[in-house]
Length: 351
Image 1 (cartoon, rainbow, N blue to C red):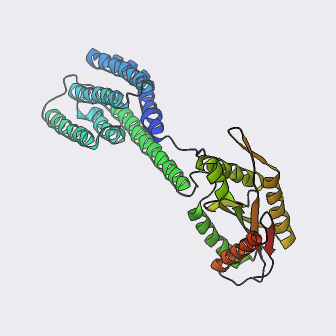
Image 2: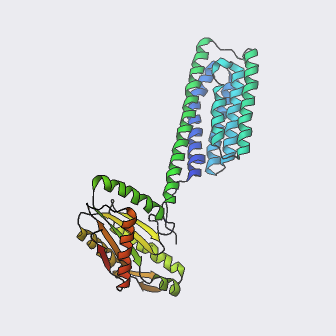
Image 3: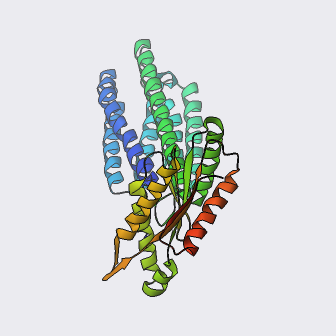
């Protein structure tokens, strides 16, 4: 039984939410552009943008069907075709050349194979070059006066800058969240959902640095499940796994925001807490021990009773020992608790 982890669904966010944002933004922009184009008198451009709006709607529909690659292809093909057409109609100064840059960015974010992305970007470059070469040497098919040219150029510039910036920002957020999710996954025990040994080692180093500055006393508890091998031998490893998951849950129920719980290895856990007195450490340890002892674990039709042994230490203000000595001392007290009969707490107050 694996612990539940909250993963960032990168595919959904990038290929569905982000893509839909682009498509829906295009539809919204077309509600502005289409009437404007109508007043230019160019029906070719008017119907072209109208078709572009429809294709964007189809792309949204295909995204719901998880046809991410196809929806992106139709959208990019349509917008690129519109860019070429409108540059030929209105000339370079109209600003429709910016479409090529926006589409090149979108190609990078699509769910296409790397080779297809390369082909797509190269196609944008070739089309840009051919369109530019033609438009710079030939007059526009539908020339507009200066007012219209300035207006269209400004509008296209603003809309395309917003589009590129939005896609880049959204992608950076996705990448950042993915990095955080991977970091959390790397520091979480796959079975119990608490911190793992890697996270604990890093935490302990940070704790040592903080302690050196503040001299804030704290306690370390090493917790081991008694006779855990008998559980695996009697009921199987699946049962043992469920017991570990439940014990981790019981430990997490008691910890505060400042406490740290980790699976140290096997059936052993570690619990770190801030405290000003050794009696506080002992009280918490005893409460944890009693909580596990009183709990009835169930597996299939079996009711199982478990106990834990706890060894720990209180790191006081005068401590000058290294972190290795902290763990060694707590481990020694755990060993003592095991040899003295198990299901008990032994805390060291001076190190």
